[in-house]
Structures are given as structure tokens and as C-alpha cells.
Image (cartoon, rainbow, N blue to C red):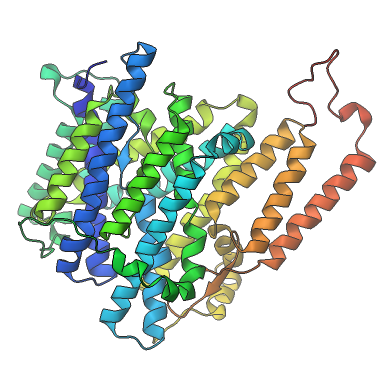
Length: 540
């Protein structure tokens, strides 16, 4: 297996553009949502992320080549690695912004609140890495318990809604750019088109996107170029340092933000497990233990260096594989992203390249991820995959609700969130906000639970059905799922029992047990197969 093949250049533009856009979002959110100082971002956050990106991409490229040599195959594709779009949003809006708002509500200055928000992100990032390191030793057991449909369904909702749908909305807001680049991307990647001169399709998409964006701007039409501004990042050499140690000395202070931080600790390990399962479904069966272990170590390392955003295995392995990427695209991505972070080059590029120019590739990745959830599971499990989409749809709806409410002034001191807002949305908007925000809390776990419940029902595995219902009740009692609270500035996770939902799961468990043992006809119960072996769909 070669280090570099033609498809690696397409893969580099796919993964590189994805990471590039996500880095632009991190800079934008850090500067304009959190209000961090530009020097703080340039010296602390970006260099720390450069180290994690470089080491992780080089390892996963080497891992793919090693597997290819071992199996005597030339088509093994490295796991995509970098900055996950969903993780960025989670850590900004579910960790750092709430921590910042709580600090401000306690009377701290903006500068002190910014430091608190950054430290909260560091602790969350560190916790995520530690959980992933520990989880790497138990991943085999987790994969045996959770059916493939459960892991892929939660992944699908990320691809379909948080990536494909969200960026499709953005594409149709700028149709002169969004529609042509989207159709070009779909034609290149789904059509299996080979271009003359081996020109990467991703390069053409980017050139067209940037060209149309600037053309519409120069002739006076509405263009995303109008929204570009100087980020303040200047060229230079920004070396990493052990800035994260400042946060480690404040772990005691972070306990007051446990309601915001703790529920996110397992999200990265669940997401990484789903990526490994996705790659396995595509034919590349990487060792889960070492894969998770390196990812966790990379995240711990970036947190020590000052990054509040974990590096992560990136969803979209199947898409990279389909366009011919192998091991080299991972090395190229790591080197390029590290160079941009360590030199401040993001500041220059961000002034000329709008996100809209390359986001069609993200939409394609979202489509591919969503499709795989249905293609890589037994046909009978398709309803289970759909069931697993619902909690993610709830989380996406909650995100849209907060965007809309924020745009009309809610979440401020003058117009805080309140229970009355929920009442208005339910009574006048016919929107059951209580259910939406209950599903949003721990929605990845809810998705796995919903899908696993459906798989157990379809496969007539009653004991598994009872176990998953008990697990759902226990997680709701622990506040991992469904538990939320209303702050003046946000509606977010509350670390405490969600008793109504605990009761709902336990009642369902009792009723199903009653029906199963008292009302179901014997002929409808799973039967033991003849001989010592049992039917795979038996009650186990």
C-alpha cells in the first residue's frame, strides 16, 4: 500500500476543507460569540490544536497503511481526524457560553468570565480525553451491547441534520454559490467522475465557490463576502505552551459548573465508537482499543496545551473511501492545518474565502453518513434507525429555537428566558418545547437507547428490551438524559434527576412485562431452535 495515491488529493480537499471551515467557525465563535481577545486565540487555542491535529493525522495515516500491508490490500482508508463540527458547537454553546453566563450573573467582570469559560472548556476537553482513554479498554464490550443500528443511527442524525440540513439552508440563502457548488460536488463524488489531468473535484468546487462569491460581490449582488471581516489574526510564529495547566489548578472552581460540564464527558467516546463502527461497516476494521486510546491521548494533550476543543475522529470515513482517499490524505491534512495554526495564516485566508465557497463538500459528507445508517444494517432494522433519529431532531430543533429566540432578544438581561416562554411556544406555537428540550439533553445516548429498544422489539429479544428500558430510567435518574434547566441567558443541562421521565420509563417497563407474561399468546413468543443451539432471535 502506497503512502500517496491520486485519491488522497481529493480526500485532502474534502477533509482539509471541512477542517478549514471548522477552524474558521472556532475563530468566529471565540471572537464574536464568546468575545475572547484575538491574541488569546492566536497564542493559546490555535497552537494547542495544531499539535493534536498533527500527531493524530500522522498516526491514523500510519495505522491505515499498516492495516493495508497486513491484509495485502491497497484500498484501506485512514480514519478522518480533526475538528468535529458538532463538537465545536457542543463545547461552545453547552459548556463555555453557559459557564461564561453563570460567571457574569455572579458579578464577575467580562475578562474574568472569559477566563472561566476557557477553563470550563479545558476541563471538559480534558475530561473527554480521559473518558476516551478509559473507554478504549472497554470498547469491545460496548460494541457487543449496542447494536450496529444504534451506533449508526446517532451518527446519521449528525450527518443529515447538523451538517447536511444546516448547510443546505445556508446554501439556499446564497443560491448563486450554494446550488452550483452543491450540484458539482454531488456530480463529482456520487457520479464517480474522473477528471482530465487527475484534477481533484474538491479543488474545482472551491475555485468555483470563491470565484462566484467574489464575482457577485464585485457586481453589487448579495454575497457572503460582505460578511467577511478582519479577524485581527496576524502572520507570525505562534508556538504552543502549557497554558492548560492554569485550568487544572482551578478544578475546584469548576465543580460549580458540573451541571454544564459532566454530561459532555462521554460524548466524544460515543462519537468515536460510532466512527469506528462506520469504518468497520465500510470494510476497514481498525483495532478499536488503540484507535480510541490515541484519540483520547491527543485530546488530553491539546487540553494541557490550552485548547478547549478536543481533537476527534471525524465522521465521514465512507465518503473519503468512496473518492479514493487512502493514507496520504491524512498526512496532508495534519501538516496543512498545523501550518495554518502555527503561523496565523487563518487570519489572512478568512478575509478572502467564505465558508459558503466550500461547504457543499460538507453537505455531501452529511448525505453519505445518513445513507450508510440504512445501507449497513439489516433491512428489518430500518425502523430502528428512524427511531434513533428522533432525539437528534429534537436537539437540532432546540438549536434552531434558541437561534430564533436569541435573534429577537431573548437570553439577555432585558429579556431573559423563562417558563412563560415555554408556555407561549406550546399554547400559541403548537410546539411542545418541554419535549424538545428534554430530548436535547443527552440526545446521543437517547438515540442509542431508542434504536436499541426498537432492535430488541424487532428481534424479539425481551430481556434486552427490559435492560435498555432500565438503563434509560437509570440515566434519567442520574440526570444524564432529559434533565434541563432554564437560566436567564440559556436553556441547558441540569445535573439532577429527571423524575417525570424516570417514571415514564419504569411504567413502560412494568406494562411491557405484564403484557409479555400475562397477555401474549404462546405462539407469538420466540421459540428455541432444535438441538443445543438457539435461534439468534431467541429471547436472550
